[in-house]
Amino acid sequence: MSSALDDVVVVDLTTEFFASVAAALLADFGAKVIHVENTGVSAPVKNRDGMHPQEAWDSHAELAHRNKQSVALNLEVRAGDEVLKKLIARADIVITDLPFTTLEAKGLDYESLCSLRSDIILARGSGFGPKGPDSDLPAIDELAAARVGLMSILGEPGQPPVYSGTGQMHTAVMLAFGTMLAMVHREESGEGQVVDASLFAGNMYSASLDLQAYLAVRAERILEPVSRLDMGNPMSGPSYPCSDGRWVTLAMPDTDRWWPIFSQITELAIDDARFDTHDKRCDVNRLEMMQVLDEIFSKQPGSHWERLFAEHKVSADLIETYAFPAKDEQAKVNRYVLDLDHPTYGKTQSLGFPIYMSDNPARLRRMAPCRGQHTEEILQDFLGLSEQQVADVEGQG
Image 1 (cartoon, rainbow, N blue to C red):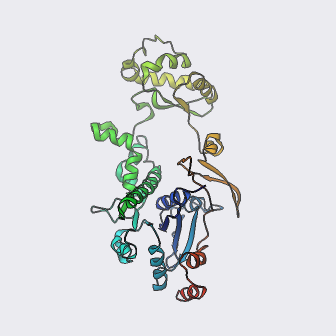
Image 2 (tube, rainbow, N blue to C red; image 1 turned 90 degrees about the vertical axis):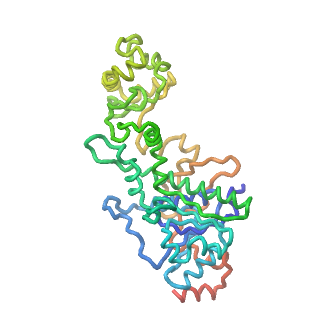
Image 3 (cartoon, one colour; image 1 turned 90 degrees about the horizontal axis):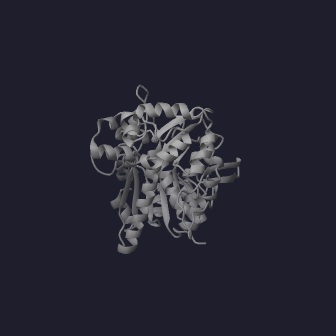
């Protein structure tokens, strides 16, 4: 079975996780992605905050670099730089997260790349976008999340902001999607271009439900984190504790429609004078209703409520931990989670493929490579260098 991106060649110059994942998404659908690792600079410190000790195997690298080939080059010397330029001349796409100033200094800006291949596509994962005074700030997700307001709406009053990390994955998908749009345009016009997807925009879209509401109505309460009991609709959004420590989450915005069923499940009288209209439930007696529901849900375990939700087909569910998708049949059959047999570490699991294509599905063709694992193969088979030429390059550092 053919892959959607057969014959597409990508030179991957990424160092940040989100941009590397964007390149991996292209590799999942058949692109030949050559990850160039610079041996001329020190490797980043992964446990820089002291809270992420080394795993038995690098699971983030396995996700970010699966289906890629790795070439190790010293890009600080002329010989390594020349090999890189030869790779780019054979590529359709260069994907990177380097600042514009660094790209220009290394002769990797778009104009210079066009001299190597006139229709090249430069895909850049950035911190704050390609224009404006902050266009060259580093691509660090925490900084973007802090600026857009996402972190401030995740905490509760008196508690510190919460960093969710969701903006990285939004940006990764946007970068891969934008790159494919540029490829379609090139097929029609013969022209390459620069694609930029920023963590700034990715975090804005990850907060879109709240941010869009604020942009539309400028409501002051949207600016501040809210407590659990400060939700506008007791039946849509808040969560309630069960007797076994699990939590129920509700999503029934049309309360007039759902109230008869919901009152039956919770054994509240349908004509309870406190809650028998939408305005009473969501405005006048909102806080009282939430307190009543707190008491009701806390009397039974999560399994009890889960069974009733399923029987009555209501929009509610239990809040799960990361352990749930790891064993969930739905995640398995859709290949959202993969069972792997790692050649070094044995049986393990990894995130799978978030995009489904019936005729050209994503495939796991290879695990994330070791650094420089495919250097000789790429230089000889892809660039056509002889063994002596490869040895000469190695001899030049």
